[in-house]
Image 1: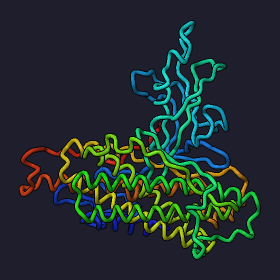
Image 2 (image 1 turned 180 degrees about the horizontal axis):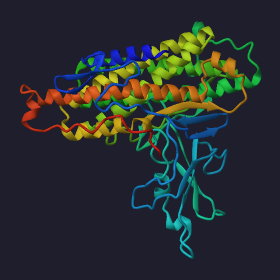
Image 3 (image 1 turned 60 degrees about the vertical axis):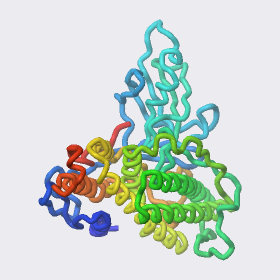
Length: 446
């Protein structure tokens, strides 16, 4: 997909919002025309991506656009880690079985208490960050380290994740034919006869991870429907969100079918833990923040990464499926922008500021998807939907700069102009404050 195609996507999102397709509002009644690369004037910036964090289970690694760096501040009164680096996740033990891992070190007190007494588990887990996930799932101390060092493991969610309490929830994979292709679904059966065993193994691992991610998106959209209903959303938004939920079921089914074909055995999900999924998410500002991060940022980027993979794929079944998924995911992203606009119209300054912070740090909400470490044939992997990490990173950077940033600025400024209008009832009760330069930050450093 060329830059002109990205510009058309930006125009479609702005059109769905009722805003000018080729310009960004910089003040009520004033606009700046966007160039093809998304650059204009008045606070427009270009995102740059850095090296990604990663973690691995079996033959799949997940990556995010942001770099793990030192000097990360944790919450809860904990001291700042002196270092945090991405490592390979353990295969077994109490920290085994996760997709992401970081080796995080805190200062040791000479002749002081043991590290596990000095730093609580909550403190250590809060130092973990990867994509959407801002807290680790488990930690394991390293008793031989010179400082207080821990292996902290968790997930690194991509697309539209199912987040509960700051942690991405995924089902596990098992032998399960309930999500595989139906007998007449020849369009979801890729050609595998000419693939060597390592390539098939790598593709099976990749598509299993993709399938579990799509499966989790079903839960995320189901919650989105409930949020819209609880907040009194108009019927068109509720209907579109309901359709998106059904779309995600099909996306998961297609991905599980591919995983089953490459692996030679039926693959499906285990049960998914949904306990606590509605806790704290029915507040209007909390809903707006989640829609901005999960939908407007992450799903917009994900849809265009899938579109690029579709363009590069040559296997007929994979290419057709990816084009379908990309088109539907972009519809879901547009839905997120529309839902956010609806909430912002009546949300007030606090909501606008909270949403602005999401766009200020947009790169922190972008994952790059699974990376396999089985030595599959690169060209055949590409033909079957797998793109190298660097290509996904470049695409994410382009989308943040040319689509997410300009659309965020235009949306926020448009809302402020509407609120400032003499005909707006909202101006009688509040004064809106536009967060400074949305989406202008460099990729976050968890």
